Length: 262
Picture 1 (cartoon, helix red, strand yellow):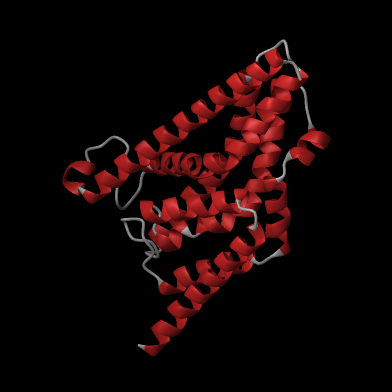
Picture 2 (cartoon, rainbow, N blue to C red):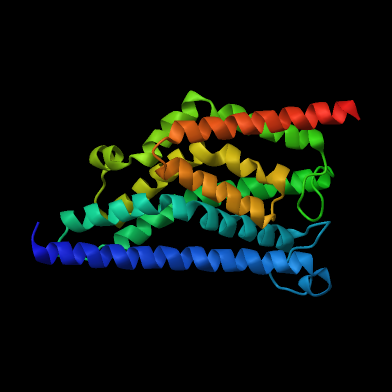
């Protein structure tokens, strides 16, 4: 590899990483602002980004959908960053005379399109749970049965073969790029879409845990984000997933038997 190409790759990598960091920082700033508004309801309800606590109308649904979409960006982009950087590097190597930023942006858009679809599903689910009084107006679970069920589901999925298969793809995307590479901006978008599909199957149960732990509990949002990141980059990913799965199953059992003993 020539020194000129090495310099360009280094520059591109730094600029893409900086752009991704900016997206994540803005997303977390939005969530922190919304969390502050929920903690200070006297002024929080006057904020444009705050949905009503109960009896949602169409605009409230839009705001909750936006909240979920931004939350997925904040949680998933850090874990996807190594793959996005790898895509940018491969794209630059294949097209040395053309910039890589437009294609990388399309890959990211495809990836986020998948999580935007999940956000729509989560919004509808939250609306239904709020209507059934299984989630409080403050977006926290009000039912030990719901919380235990979600924890058990997440725990069992963490131990499943499907989880490990999708996790293996997310950790080692070089084979995916070798066999699924598509040229052009539309090709980049489709690759992002497909990679996002693998990540969605890998992480959907962890995201569903937010209904048990608190949709806007930023401590748990950060904790689950860290777990997703560690699963993607730690040398012993199966060990991490198995420990998390056993913890979730044990937590579910504690909620059930603790409630029965009262």
